[in-house]
Amino acid sequence: MDRQLLSKILVQMRKNLKEGKAIGDMKVGALLALGHQLEAIFYYLGHELGTTLKVKQVKEINQIPNELKDLISQFNLGEIEITEATDEIIELKMKDHSSIKDLIKKGIKASGSFCSFEAGLLAGIVEKLSDRHCFAQEVGCSLQTGENYCTFMVVFQRD
Image (cartoon, rainbow, N blue to C red; front, side, top):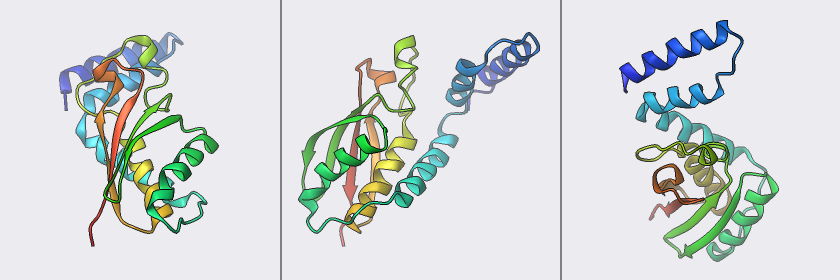
């Protein structure tokens, strides 16, 4: 956690609130300052949400990519492009999702992963579709790479 940055942001937030100004961008800055502690919480929240969505379990693993694309579109979670799909992993590019949608246009940069909520959400949805435990991780964040998409990998747990 970057305590100095967080302290500066909180001071500025308090000032802006007193003056009736917006603080939305500073909330994001505060999250960046808090760092990895929130990644686990956001992953958990995304995972829990993903497992509560009403989805129909697929019979074959190879059906997951198409079902995943449909669900992401149906629930307005962004746009995805599946780049690889096997019995062990699904790799995909996701753009216009909630964590970065507004930030990418403002030129905000972050080091490391930022989209742990979406990673958890993808894991939860894929688990629900396949009835197999899996883990998802963001392997390339647009706030780090400058691309207009984030890259994720969903890995199925081996029995």
